[in-house]
Length: 134
Image 1 (tube, rainbow, N blue to C red):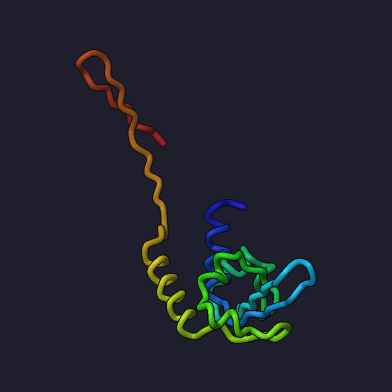
Image 2 (spheres, rainbow, N blue to C red):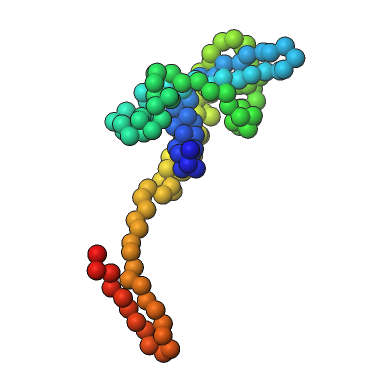
């Protein structure tokens, strides 16, 4: 998987998060699971759906977040999660995340254009330019 595909995957997951579930494991601590609602992400964009077919296979996609994502949530919200129950994510936190994603999307590269330049050689003090016949 290419690096840009990894970023796209993360962007889709983070922008479609809706619920979080806390599972308590004996001897292993807490395990968090985040649920994403996939139809809310650019439904007209078939290319993205094909590139990430496993994510868009069903309406809901779940993943186990990294510790940093859970730590970015308000402490009181995480502390009050009930084990085994899906809880909607904190509204204020989600708004803040969406604002960050919107800014990141505006600053991201949308398209790269490759242009062939004619080859230039320097011979002594003269410049020789070769034009491509293609």
